[in-house]
Length: 306
Image 1 (cartoon, rainbow, N blue to C red):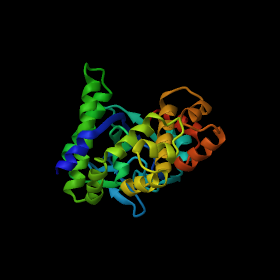
Image 2 (image 1 turned 45 degrees about the vertical axis):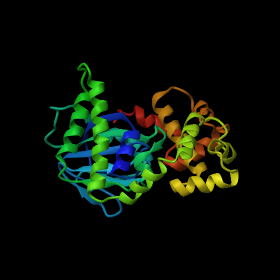
Image 3 (image 1 turned 180 degrees about the vertical axis):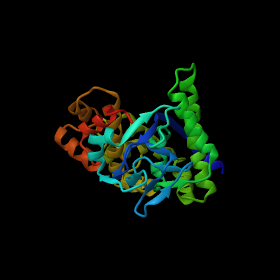
Image 4 (image 1 turned 90 degrees about the horizontal axis):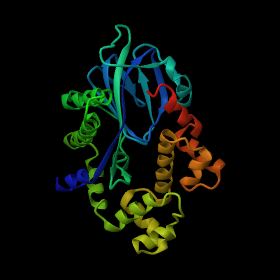
């Protein structure tokens, strides 16, 4: 348990956004994907997710780890089936944001919270567990936290940002507690508790984060960890389960998503900033990873911001 506490203490949790959503008509997003973790609380109606179309009903939660693609169906009845790309272009036909007190008698609805949780401000914690989406039932504490985050994020009360941050931290901890208490992915947690303490690996994580736009060849990483170039890839994969160049690409693309969401920089500028001199290659890799072009990722953020 001490090792788990060390991981939790090392977590950097960042709130992204939270909304209440009316479902205007049922739909299925066949390949839902986000780099951030998503917690969805169903208020009225139901969701279904995954290959088996597992149901998430009223007062239950669906947790989707960042970086994991999953099929999600919203609302009861016969849904329209859309790709993530198509959904982004027509989102306003299916979802409408609403505020507390604006419940509609005819619409099913849910709330969601997006957040990141990184170990040493570098590694996506839930993604590192290699876990799939899962439903959480009968957890009043998590339900209250989601609703409190949404209420505070929508308010202009003094200190609301601080309360949102504290509650998002609490949300991440409660999710980890749930995973441990349910015996889910405990082996991966135990493995992480070991490799997150390795100082050479921590140095590599930090170096990658600080130099995403620079040369991050295995030779550079070997110098950071003070191991041979031939060994560094094997060493990194042995501890993390992924080779360093794949990890670096994911970190670069995650930063690209953040820049698309928060800056007005051109796609060419963003590509260069994260280490891609060839804009066309950057765009191909981005679409391959996220299933949509970089320009549409930016448009997704501007469409109703839901």
